[in-house]
Length: 362
Image (cartoon, rainbow, N blue to C red; front, top):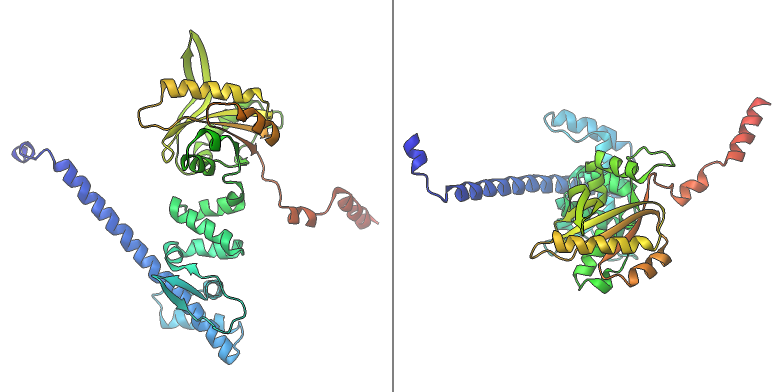
């Protein structure tokens, strides 16, 4: 054995790494192929049921019987519960036809007065069935649904992460931070940086009193670092908390320091309780200058600053950032997600609840 080790070529490690990568890629392709066939099968089942119902007027009662008979006829096959078959039918109705490899798949009606949106088939096939179940049930607007589908594929979101992103309306928050990126970064870097930031950020995983201190907020975010990173978005890598800077015989500390793997730059985050104040921008500009001088490596892009406060006054932020040399964004954060307007209007007021309680006691 010692002779074999002694004669192992120096490039053996590269060979091992290449083979491991090839095996992993093959495993991924196999998983995607199985998933693609499953999605195609479920779509086909929905197609068959829908057409049979249209041709012969069958009602919903056929689905429980179909589920029972399929499980009896194919005892080793799972996934054909009544609920899942209902989902297959709903899935087909959402995508009656789609484009796959430049070919139109489905039962299109050339006399249909309204054209049905043709969802990219490759995108449909790339997502697991559980993801489709959540998307169809939760999002009716097709462009919005496609945004979440593309994001889930691009970032590898699990089903739980997808649900979290939907529930916090990530599509409405992404790219909404107030910034001077267009003035301080060249395209396309400015667009990429803008799309990397949200407004507001949702920190509903924290349990803080209303009169919390900034240091408590910082400690809570680090204690829930995994959830914090999920909320920040893809690409953020944690570098340090209260990161020490020694400047002119004085000590300074950055609240949170990250490195963004896609933007290839450091990201300085300053946490502020309450309203945005113009002087925050000057302090952040100072931090970005120091990080660029002391930490930035050759090949890194300019450091980006992100000021997180509870009430980011956009007008004040725009004026404050206009004269800054460094790319800086200002966003808000919420400790609890506000209820949607339509849900707020459907909930009873305190007065209405009091009237109901008085009525019950009469």
